[in-house]
Length: 470
Ligand code: SAH
Ligand code: SF4
Ligand code: F3S
Image 1 (spheres, rainbow, N blue to C red):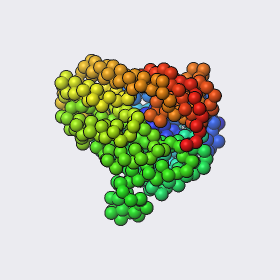
Image 2 (image 1 turned 180 degrees about the vertical axis):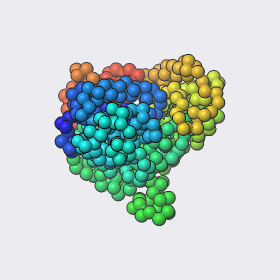
Image 3 (image 1 turned 30 degrees about the horizontal axis):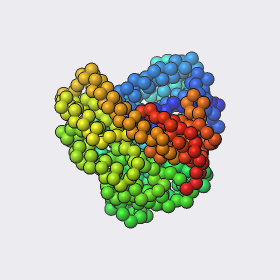
Image 4 (image 1 turned 90 degrees about the horizontal axis):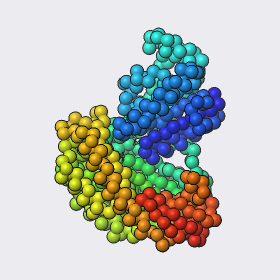
């Protein structure tokens, strides 16, 4: 066993888990390769948030099945949200998979790898694919239990030396009626403030200049620690005040750290204290990803989002007033069950009123086991598609307008590396917009860029001055 191939899908949480998978495999002496064909170990880190995610994966797993047939000594492992969602059916659907772990059991990946490489097990497995009875399989092929283990504590291999994800919590307890995430990632669990501060100090010592705090609902960070303490677990050495704003303020004071990002923010938990903490913390970037999902109060209630369109717009106003140049991005769903044309028009109206700086738009996709999947009024695919296209048109127009407002001005950019075609450098502004730039700068530098052009997704510019440190 010498090489591995890893393909990761889904959200930032999964991208961060992928870094942990790399650390684990490389810790065992495996080297990463870019194509599955020659690799000894194939790992697919999966997402199942919409059916389109499942469909995309199916092609990749088809390739894995073929490669496994060609060389049964090859090991195929599947991690992430799909095997967790389908745990009872997973190995029946994908018999060629050697082992699978859900997102709360990533720490067992090494055990699966060990079990799969043991010659005795390998023999048992090829016997099994020849039709022998399932009881001959190794005892454990999958780990799916809902445990308190936190993958946030596992080592990760960072893609770039100067940027790092920091997982501040796992899971979600909101149970929005369309969403599978709470079922696959378990309940909200926060890491201790002291552990997070120690981790960020260590990262900064290693050269990290930008951290992105990750959680499905970062605004609820720490609230579970209080209730767990009440239930007899050791209390968190938390600072005064609401935990997430306190965390931002504590990180803002970390010497040597240049930028703090966070996602995702749930609008229902976006407090005035949090708005103030963003406004008053210079290291915290001017970007809030604030998924609206819909603009009709009836649909928002059916989605169990816990806010109205007015509340949402009030939060947008508070942010724009307190944080000059804040970029507010969002997620929107078109065609939730029972959504009328009028209700959809309210989503379009909310998009205009909020003037989002960018948006991810999705067609509603029924997920097995979620409440909305059983609602009456499931809409035909054409209706959903036509609505999402109108959302795309509106949000792209607003994004272009927002980005054009930067032309002729300077933006602070953290240079990440070469642009996609290799002809320029690429980085991100504090507002989280991708900036393609020319001029003398190297990866990891923070520079002022004179913005010369804009599209709905990127800015273009030239380096004006290297500011490097604030
Ligand atoms: N925790 C984050 C994001 C979770 S998933 C949050 O609460 O904002 C990312 C996005 O996928 C969601 O914001 C939602 O817009 C979309 N999504 C989730 N389930 C979906 C479904 N069943 N159909 C369509 N879009 C969905
Ligand atoms: Fe899903 Fe809602 Fe939780 Fe986000 S807050 S992960 S949309 S259940
Ligand atoms: Fe997908 Fe799981 Fe993230 S379902 S969006 S990878 S939490």
